[in-house]
Image (cartoon, rainbow, N blue to C red; front, side, top):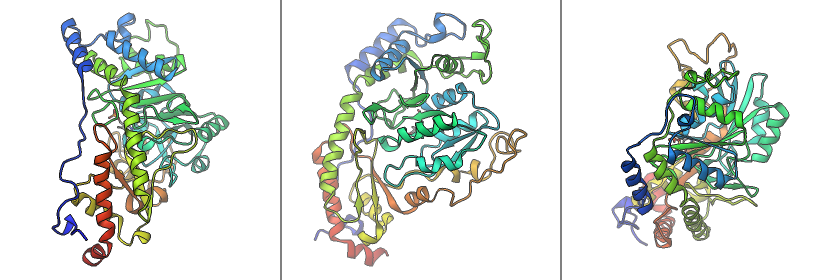
Length: 428
Ligand SMILES: *Cc1c(COP(=O)(O)O)cnc(C)c1O
């Protein structure tokens, strides 16, 4: 039995796994062309052609439209900006409630607060880790205006049920697809089910231009309102003779030509990067299935998981050691992995203390919102269980890693499973 690295033995893996992005000639050529043109941003905050951005911004948007077979694409300088613009464009404002998962990157919920509305957290499913449609309906009140579904870790949320609920109660649906570009639900791209879908091109996502994102929609007036929020709408709405100026408080969420040309080149690689992730993940699933106590990711019928990370739900009792010790042992073996994901969003101080804008508690305490929203521990028990005990994440299924790298992961698991009693004796 090999001695565990945790107790001074040799590591199962000595070479670091990479988490950087890779660029090729396409990105380099694009950047050189942009620099040569002397135009780093084509945007002007005035009605007219330049209101919609420069050449590469529009080329990127056209490419995105074609890929998703959707009518409108609005590039932005982050997915956070895209979510803010989408929520604003949907007419959500003070006193409104929006139902969202607590198990996501913070921006999925903060974007609601940006419009002075109230996030209401619905618990997740313990298989998909996405919002549980069965938990949504109970939370709907006369203030509810929208649902935000996040396709977490690259796996689609249950969009059919979510859309059914939205239709029944006349709610908007915004899909946060930051971790799931190219994922499918029932054979259809995520981001194309709801009123708007939002993608991220930040450094850590499947495709990246450093910072950036795009929102997609089939609704023309929603697209225009997102464009106005992106580019100083208050200064252009009169010359565009707009009637609905609610929420048209403009920001500068414009993407530069440099980012757009990199995003464009990256976007063309999306399918091959996803194929690479999926192949490695499936290989890993096959190899890890021999270890007891691990629930490995499932791929539903008609769904495509794009494995932004590889999630494992584990049963501590069956393994015989705690998740945290398993994660510690894997990390010591040279395998990057995380115990849980983020903490439930409602545990962050702005929610716990209900302080966002100013010191008086707006929007949680506000003339338009007399209700007392509950953000206490215990409101979403499944999320809390994943956070505290059941979930671990492996961020290894990605280019340029190969099956050989996955074999190192498997070797580390094997070593640890051969030494479970040692870990129990030493650490538990
Ligand atoms: C990364 C991420 C965001 C935010 O993306 P940015 O482009 O960094 O603003 C939002 N939601 C989820 C689920 C994410 O993973």
